[in-house]
Length: 212
Image 1 (cartoon, rainbow, N blue to C red):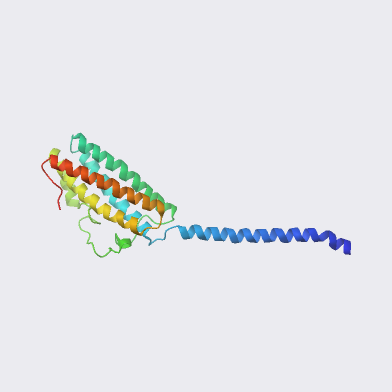
Image 2: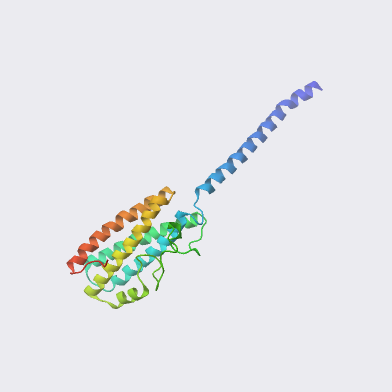
C-alpha cells in the first residue's frame, strides 16, 4: 500500500502543478484582456469624438480641393489642392481605421464637438457642421467660379477650414490619452498652420486676404 501511494505521489504533484499553472494562465489572460480593453477608447471618449469629427471635417477639405483642381490652371493652387487631398485623405483613413480597431461606430448620434464640451455652442447651418466648414452655398459658389475667382474663394474657404480644424486638433492634443492620436493631432496643427501661412501669401499675390 505504501509503495502504491509512493508511486502515485509524483503523478499527483504533477497534476496539481499543471492545474495551478493552467489557473495562473487563465488569471493572466483575463488580466491582459482587461488591460487591452481598458486601453481602447470608449464610445464617448475624446479619441472617438475627435476621430469621427475630424474625419468629417477632412472629407470636406478633400471635396473642396477636388473642386478647385478643375476650376483653375494655376500650378500653385493646384499643387496645394493635391497636398490637401493626399494629406487629409490619408489622415482620414487613419482615423476611421482606429475607430474600427477600437470596435467603435464611425458615426454618432451626439452633436459634433460634444467631446470638446462644445456640442451645444455651435449651430450647424447649411451643411457646415463644425466651425470652419463651408456651407453648401459656398461650395456651390466655388463650383461655379473659374480662374482667379475660384482661387481666391478656395484659399479663403480653406483658410477658415484649417483654422477650425486646428482648434479641434489642439483640443485633442490637450485632452486625449491615446499617444498615437495625440501625435497625429499635433501633426495636423503644424501642417495646417504652415498651409495657412502659405495661403495668406497666395491671397496677397492676388490682391486679397483671408476673411476674418
